[in-house]
Image 1: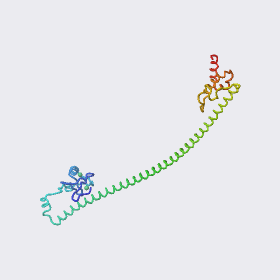
Image 2: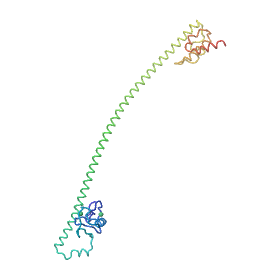
Image 3: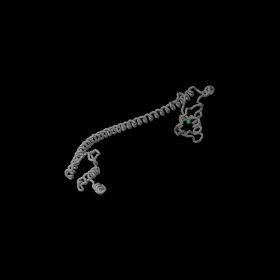
Image 4: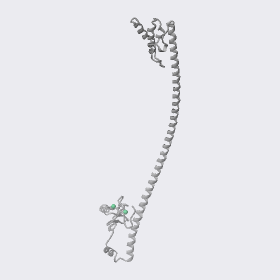
Length: 260
Ligand SMILES: [Zn+2]
Ligand SMILES: [Zn+2]
């Protein structure tokens, strides 16, 4: 707070109240508000709270009215020789100048401290910004490397899935081949066993095999087909070639023969 043109400020540490009404002034050129002056100078020996000077003289501490009345002003220096009047004025003015100078020093100190704090804060902020920038850059790098890894995985995945599809196609092809071979085997075997017995149906349309031949027939399905076939041919040893896939079906077929 700047010192007002016509106002003193209490010199008590950390008080800094604007002085008005009455003030306590000392021979060491310090001034205090009424509260701190009456508190500090009531004990003896009196010590200045601003500079620790001993104030033992009768006129070392004066409680003075800051805005004296016209009557007081008319009489206080009346009768004094001009040089005495000027001497008093000069001493009072140097008190004032000292106060102004002290306040100015205090303001400059406060200002330089604030500037130092500001510089420190500025430095800290720029350091933080720099470290954030570094952090951000490393994160960006990490993200781009992760992206590269992800792209690599995507590429591998599409490769693998393409290979899988290719394998699937091969598998389907082999399965179809295998099924057709097995079917051919079945037909050849039956002809050998039946000894040239004529059949009313082609192999695919035989009773008991009336369901369409699926790409992946299970051995159980084949067994059932063989079982049905056995009833028609009525050959005791005929279905041996078929029933190697499903012996339980063969047993069931034998046990049901006498009922027929
Ligand atoms: Zn005070
Ligand atoms: Zn003092």
